Image 1 (cartoon, rainbow, N blue to C red):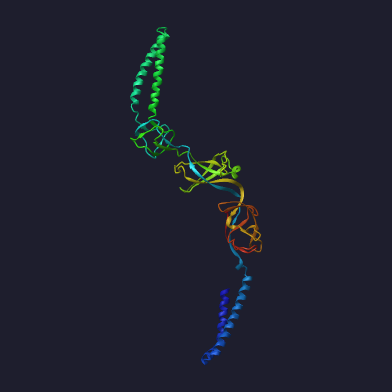
Image 2: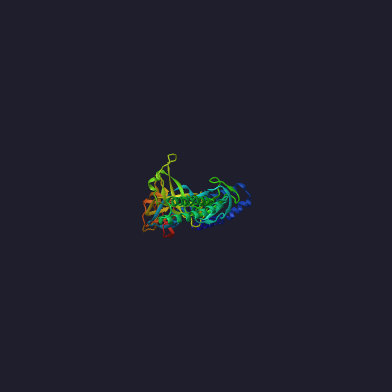
Length: 391
């Protein structure tokens, strides 16, 4: 329409100029500067009048042409949906089975049976320390034990048959028991020369080298970790004490490995730290692929609110009116055409750029989700397309 009006103005201007072509040419031929300036001023005034008329017509046409005023919008039909709110705290990945093994016997580390990264079973031999001749001493004691046992059994048979003295029987019994105790003690000492796995896990670090002299209880030899029983330890502000229980749903985000896990709180501490007013929780953490390592930093998102049938809308569809109230717009067909209807809402919790609406909207309403920022209440709208699911 604007193009047509512009073309009309140009035509009128050309027509006007055409009617006065001779006079303009005459004035130019005459070469009178005053006449040329006067004629130019006259033509400029005529052009300004034409432009003003065109602008008036344009405004009138736009006021009557409702299709030009209709805003292009996109909607979605609201439905009752599950809404969950989470608060975030920082935590640390831990395992109770992360230990350094020390020898129980002093000597030369003669054998290391495992490699770093190797999986081992509970009770498996990991390393051996030279026994310093204890093996030979054990062999001698076992021979003496065998003799003492034979002597005792012989004296016992005689004693049972009422043959032989009681003192001989008691001496044989005492000697056998003493030798048995000494032999068992020697076996125990030799057993301490072998380092075994106290639980199933992974060899994380071989600290001592083969051939090195290790001292009982002083020289670290091997670090053993169980990666299958991992958990996150986190401190939670006491304000959430009534909302956090064993079994509460959580999400665990490990930014360093780019993974998020679903979990549950398995233990809630009973002590509130007076220094920072927090209590500790432990969250079970699955680690089937062994990708999670102890001491990783974790973001723990704890579920503190759940609504099974909530109306949830995108955060960017909410505005504030002059009174400070939260408003949004819905698509309504009032019989004379489609309009944007402004509705005042009451907001609840927000999570992940979604907001729960406590009042003002209902299931089935068509929420305007695009083109909403420039709308006015009652403004005519044109529907671009419609999403069937709640955003």
